[in-house]
Length: 172
Image (tube, rainbow, N blue to C red):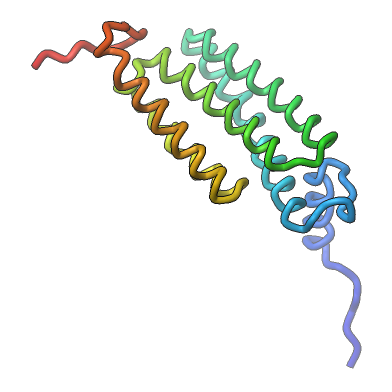
């Protein structure tokens, strides 16, 4: 009995997507784990840029052009990060830069929607999860620390008298 050695259409499509996500980097120039990290980082970046366009339009229609502008700037910097990743072949650097861009965007959104009291700030907790997918244990611990510092910072701002946009005053 002979087997058909031709790849199926889904296998061919998956291979094309995987090759596209490697950003043109020769797989022989990098370890398999590094190549996997590059694919994860580039895939997540393209996904976030794609959905970012939709959110930018949404925030424009909602009358929050500051957040729309933050999304557009973050998207452009994310594309530059992919170009840097293609040049350096360093997924660890690319992941840290990508996470920093995401953290900055979440902080802008949190600032504009009320800080710690805003549900937008809860997205900061996604940073260590994203780090776990793209970095090693040390990178995860770094992003756990950064996340806790950012949350603590947003928590303490009202105690220092800083009034954020859309902050609700709690009467005890």
